[in-house]
Length: 328
Image (cartoon, rainbow, N blue to C red; front, side, top):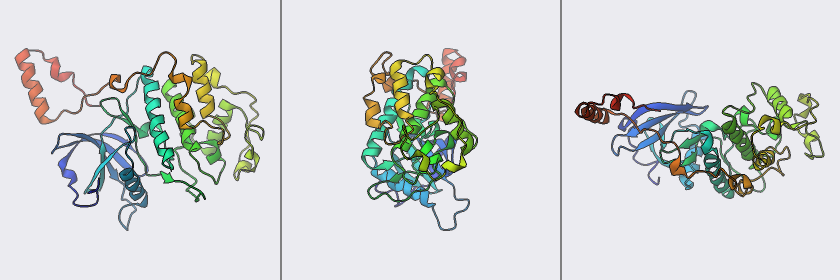
């Protein structure tokens, strides 16, 4: 990491295996370092409209990642000419029985970030990566910011719409770690349901979906709610009930309590990462599995491994030994 801005290697030293995802600030590929044979995630920075070099968002992300060291935070390995950021490779893959394991690791990573006065501001399922040993890592720090006292103004339109907290939608000037915790609630619900919880197509629809799910907010449960800058732009439906229990009828009481704490309208009462880590949901059966028991995926199929597999196949006369390999 200390040499990240020194003598950079060429991106040609990496073999791109497949595309993992794409966002506002770049494209992430799964790739193989041809020198070390290590599987990494390769993030290509978008330079379409940049006249003065690397975008400020990418510089912020690189600066933050150089400082951070935690098992559940993606690690910046180096910057290579191209311009790409090279991170540990991970692919996000989950099964319902492993949800607790994934969310626990997410919370540990977040507790570390928040303890170090960093708000991620763009948590979503596609920004969680998983190593082949089941270790979940929080990635994409392009919108992350340091916070402190006094608070500095931050870009208001952050967080992908489906994971955006109600205070942001209603124009709050104060951005806190509670933004990330709302997103954790959305991620947990999405993993449990196998689909996004609040898939709005506009800010107006997003607010309406939240109200349908949680009921209409008021001053009693959210002091200062009626004074938020954009409240006048919304006509909130009258919804007296919280429908979370109806949405997840099979979830345990502890699971419902955790979701309700994450979906508190009042940001000051919303659960922190530390609160969530102590939740009885993670202590009741079925217990979270160990990361190493998470589903695995094959690293890659380069020419050498394919040739070896083919040779082995011929020798053993088991033709499916090659054909059954997949790249995810």
